[in-house]
Image (cartoon, rainbow over all chains, first blue to last red):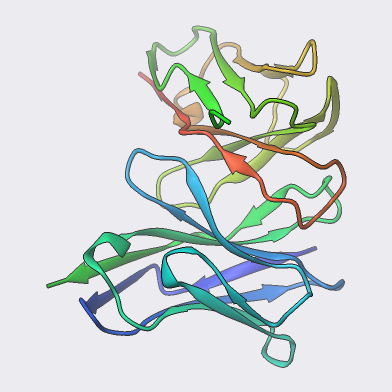
Length: 114
Length: 116
């Protein structure tokens, strides 16, 4: 069965600092991986996705993620945090057994301080 | 493209009552998904439709839950005899292409259910 694990339920950074949110996956087949962001009282918004076309994926709002098969990782990064980045971030994998439904990690809350 | 909409946004009910939620997907999207999200957890898959056909149901979807998508457009999720454990955010998502694991799922704002 496929799964994702997000390391660290809460990450705090200063404005302008590097953002690193960790995600490791488990899959017996080539995975398709996603990062979503959820702002308070809003639905999930896609940041970026890995579809095997390129290992370094660029997304919206300056975020990017690198697929590393040897490390089974798909960590999300942003060079310089903004206050507006404060939100909850979810890593997900497409479930090949359930009609491509997404299997989500437990999420990481990002706090940004001035 | 008006996005995925859900109604109501909030629902408070007493234990034992029935509730129904509605989801309107992005127009012409074939796939529609329901997820449940509890506090501190990521969304968990409940069920999905391809057009009007319900093709998969999670073990989380007990017999008290039923979902429909009668004309392949909007969908409803009904919970009968609600229990306090049903309190959660119910999310709906839609995607355009059937069977494409890379296709983006677009999420609605969710319906927050509180069972007293």
